[in-house]
Length: 237
Image (cartoon, one colour):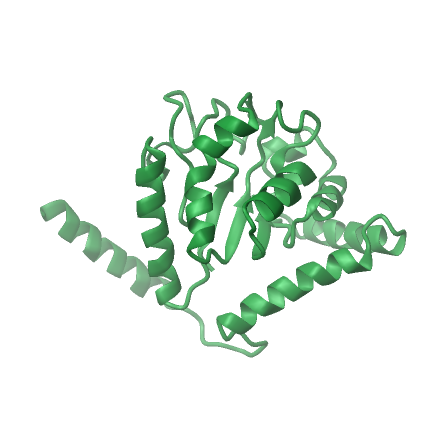
């Protein structure tokens, strides 16, 4: 799995986190380059994850540090930020990562990663995405400085997320797992909601022929050397 490509349209000069990670400030260019990158990743039998839905390009706060607020309405999103994501979905995107940003004119209470309006209504219903939805990393400042990690995870799954990404801290991971199990046992999250996510994940694993078997470790140094060689060629050309 590769958490790429970035489909954010870099429209805010004060954005502290997207910048050169984006393909540019024009949604059509971002769409074209982003979709081709996504296809290239897929051709190598790697799962691409397009991000950061519904668009982190017009923020002035780094979500690793705090919670960005964006004042765009749905019309603005549909005519700008969502264009690359819609194009990726049309071209069989496998996974979408949800950003930790608050769209105050769309859901004033919940960041996108916890918003049923963003995940279910806009991404799944409006854009017809039926692939796997994953959150951005849940121990980022946007979440842990404003919400309980466990409660945020429960709310995110309730909103339509399939995978909760917790990349830092074993105790955080166990806490989230136990919170989700408790939410299901109490009926806060239905078994049907869990089954939907399990089905999507298993369907994706089948597509990429991923099985529960031991595989050889990847030679990271070999990969890094290849990247360095390609960069050197690029600099010369």
